[in-house]
Length: 311
Image 1 (cartoon, one colour):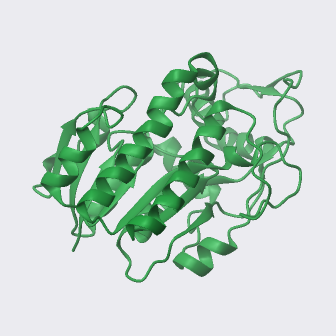
Image 2 (cartoon, rainbow, N blue to C red):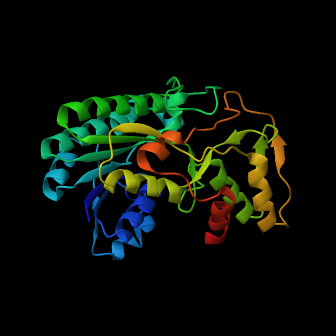
């Protein structure tokens, strides 16, 4: 069993990843400044003797160096980040510090202490609004936000450093992740968690456009599993991979599932499409399958049912 350091451990994806690592018998050091993460997300993990949470900001000088030196993890799963596209636009300095500088500190600490592997939370945002679907890793990287630019810069930083330092890097380009613990009140929450809150409150949802726009929605449980595989399975090689299902799901499809659980809630309201919204997004999952032996197992309908019942 391995020792794994997880940054952003109290976040949406981080807490599920932490739970899965502990269930697999690994020892985990979680690091989170609780800016957007929640200690309550780690309720289960905090009861385990195999887990410790350190409240700290990995973008501060010396933090990662000290933690990696003391814990000596076999791998770091780096999930801590500024995840708001809007905030990356309004505060570019914060975006740079939380998304790029923090990654630099992770790479420096890993190189100094001989950490063998880094798993990095990248994003499909690096592809921008490409219409060449399904999107493969070879597709042009054309980010349209500072957030996407920072994720791409972090990928490049880690991949270059891995060659010089001799550690393995896996960059995971997440598509539309959803599931329990995603904060519907967050300004950068996914559309599914926003819909979930509206239905729970007995209120109709608003769809911008005709509802036929599609996304590659993937369960947070599958994403957590991809992280664990990349961090712990032997003989993984350096590379990037889309973490997606390869299945397109429309907003109308999503609404139909919610409607089955909430038959008394009025149907959706439709509003004009918003300028700049991407109409269709779909990832190609082949590389994750071939390089990680990973493919999504949880259907969107099943994952939605779990989310609805979890409340």
